[in-house]
Length: 84
Image 1 (cartoon, helix red, strand yellow):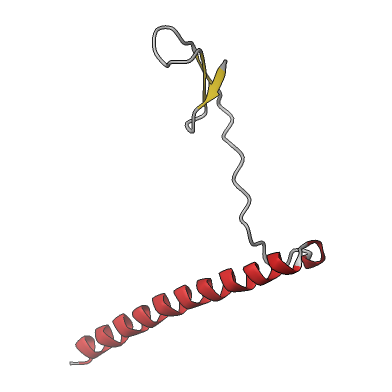
Image 2: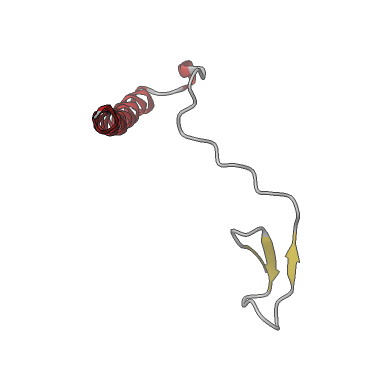
């Protein structure tokens, strides 16, 4: 039996240790494809997938707007300190 570990190691046997041999590969794992790819062909998605996508994008927009507001606040505070 072969087990794949997240670090790119294949292990034979049920337990890692003296019983199992390790094989390490230099090739990195392929990156996980994100759920949302900007500009992709949307005609392949179902109605439910498109609605889920819209909700995920709304959540991401809200997250970005929150970080943007924090950064603007920090900038404003810094400008106030340095104007004195």
